[in-house]
Image (cartoon, helix red, strand yellow):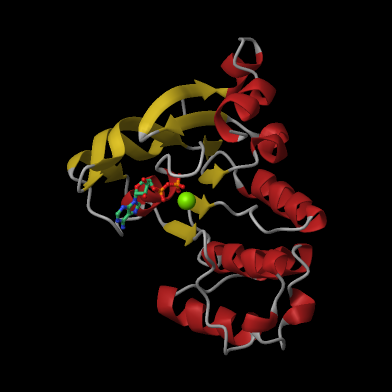
Length: 228
Ligand code: ADP
Ligand code: MG
């Protein structure tokens, strides 16, 4: 649609760590209305790209523009306070980010089955519930751009399905999500844009419609670039 707008753009972004080029000239655009998946083998630069996008790591070259959007993020390793309860974490993060979520957020908690875990210590949550709490914390301020680094790793099948359905509903015409993943197959039904990175370089950058009609179907991509 002609109403799409970029929420995040990378232009020839580089990030070097000594001799390692974690990002080696990455250009991409995350546009509204898009679930944008970032896939690639271990060490290909996904987490670096996410950290650069969030402004947590300064690029060595190129430019990154986050177009004045609110951004919510979930990290590869969940980042809440383990010694506080789920409810206390929601309160503390809400205070930090100035979030004042409406009833829609109660629905998010219910859909992720976190509403019944409010009194549980966050550090006692299973892997799947820990990831879901991290995603809930990222969503709390209703960001236009949601950035998630491997939200599916260490997550049980039921919680995976919950996360995919939530992502699908959350990403409306006004919003977008950039999601790094090892599990391209899980995102197949909601995938709008695919970027594959390998050794810090973009090797595939396509809209889902284009992918479906080309040789680059998600199954073979999964085999070629993820299941190495
Ligand atoms: P991915 O998330 O795809 O597994 P990363 O972005 O974590 O990949 O890492 C990309 C490359 O950059 C790897 O070779 C990794 O060892 C290197 N790297 C990442 N972060 C650092 C760092 N803080 N210091 C040195 N090297 C790093
Ligand atoms: Mg990573």
